Image (cartoon, rainbow, N blue to C red):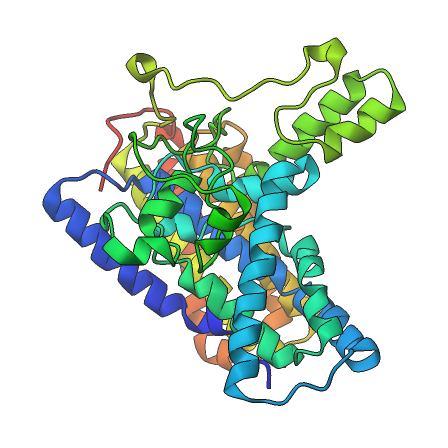
Length: 411
């Protein structure tokens, strides 16, 4: 049986985030901002939801090669697991490195780097589309003959390992810095400092970066994010904005070869007509300022409640979808994504959100019809309906204060 270890780890993720948040709040370190954290977690929820529609297809691709074209019948021994662990980490390095060196791949991976903070919520900030191509890098393992369930298990644990390294609270780890990927190494990877860009692509073992010349030790202070800040809390725009930039560049390019190169060249490449390659700029420390927004505390409370609703629905979907029909799956997934979009739009005080939010809440009430055959819903139906109607009334009363702002709450 295929077990979704990442979904099962969600409660642990939030416990550890809570511990780090409490520690940084006690120490007054300022590593967390409400808007940034909600944006990061929204990407994680969205990635898990959109992944539901691709997991079976991607697993089938690996399985098909294993069943029809594998070269060896490998025994289920500890040595096979160890070799596969090394193999998964090796191919992860190359997938990750190529995601920084090819524009079309960077267009998906860029989502993980958009946050200008660095804390455990950033670990959950994942692209909604990256898994659509990342699996291709691991197909040599299927040809060799590594069992699909073994591969899925170790691939999941390779991902889980990387959660804890997204923190500023752990400094140097001494001797371990030479072998494994650590918070210090990964902070470098998330830096926009020119000397840090495209360095430390490792998953679990930092040895690959040292072997292939992409290692950089943490030295000067790290400035996080991407060289051209996203400047948005919109989770949908975060996943498509770089594609829009590439398409716009391709449109401005004269020749067909240049239009193609826009997608296969490294980030920063432009045709000669558009100025040629543009290296990452140095950090202007004196004028450096993170993207932020201001809003009333009442609005923040509404956003938090809607985010918790999206988190609850998304989490329920991850565990119940094998027993659900396609219609309620699509409804629940759409509701979750639209609720996350609402949270991002509210944090940016978008004018169109007033009409969008009324429509979302009203449509959500009608969509409940598709859940009538799900046993657990029949038990919670009255609660769900009450929450949605309460949200509708609540939003009606706060809408007029949307653009009357005060100091941004920090955590």
